Structures are given as structure tokens and as C-alpha cells.
Length: 217
Image 1: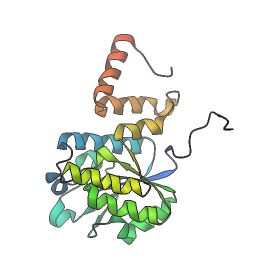
Image 2: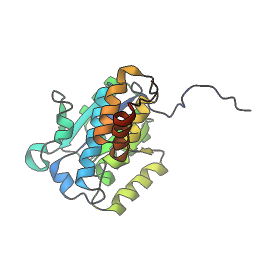
Image 3: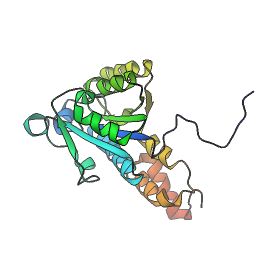
């Protein structure tokens, strides 16, 4: 018989157990993205970037043909990681660029979290490649997008069938925080939630303004 204990599940993410790879969040890639509104995509991308920075997550930023075709990485990412090295590729599959392998191996994390454009190409490629090599893969679905809703959803289904775990941007932030008593990250988590958490953020503004309420305090 199973016995309950107050410890988190092994498949839950923590700040120290995964590498986040943000892929091809660029102007040219977003122009043809139809599965998610561009404003929502930029908001969710900012949420993910700020969560990663706040919790010190091992992060890889990469673009494709930045100078010749696709344009610069979103300001929502660059402003959070102004000094971060952005790896510019020619390969559609990020995982096939040897520089990415070097970074992944340097960080040495078993779990890989992916977000980017487009889901069916630039996320499926590294997701399936990483799974094939024994990594655990998570995909932040609402920080990804594709040329159609069908393309996005079929890509997610393909990855899920092979073992990838889908999640959302707000879920990513709150899973890293996980306990409101973690005071060292509490204020920034609340700030990021207010800025990018939609209706949840509005609720936080209301509770703190009207009642000075605080979770876990």
C-alpha cells in the first residue's frame, strides 16, 4: 500500500533540475504564427523569461538566421537577459547544433524545458531528439505557437505521445515557487504574476490593495 509523505513528486520542476531552452522567439517567426495572439505570446514569453531569471534557471537562448532573415530575439527576452549569449543557428532543429549540446552538457540537467516558434518544427525537433537521448522533456505550450491551431495541437500531441510533458507559462512560474513561504522569491513571483498573470494578476492586485493580503505570510 502506498504511503503519503510531504515531499514533491519527482516530475515536478524545481529551479535546479532543468535547463530552459527558448527558441526562435523572433519577428519573422511570429508574423506567420496564428495559433496564439501575438500580444499573448509576447506576454507569456516575458513571464517565462522572468521566471527563469528570478529562480536562476540554467537558460539557453537561441535564434535562427537572426541577421539575414528572422530578426532579433523578442525584447521581452533580451531585456531580462541583456548580457546573455544568444546562439544563432542555421539548423531548424536546435538540437542538431553542436553548440547547444555543449551548453546542455555543461549544465548537466536531466530535464529540458522548451518554448519557442514554431511548435511543429523548432520545438518538435529538439523535443524528440532530447527524448531519444534519455532526457525528460517539458513544453511550455502557451509560450509556443505555429502557423495554425491544428499545426500547434498536432505537434503537441506528437510530443506527448513520445513522453513530453505539456505545461503553461504561469504554471511554470508557480511550480518553481511552489511554496508561498519561500520569502527570497516571493516578492518577485508576485510582481511577475501581476505583470503577466492575466486575471490571476488582477486578483493579486485586488487582494493586496483592498486587504493587504499575502499568501503564506
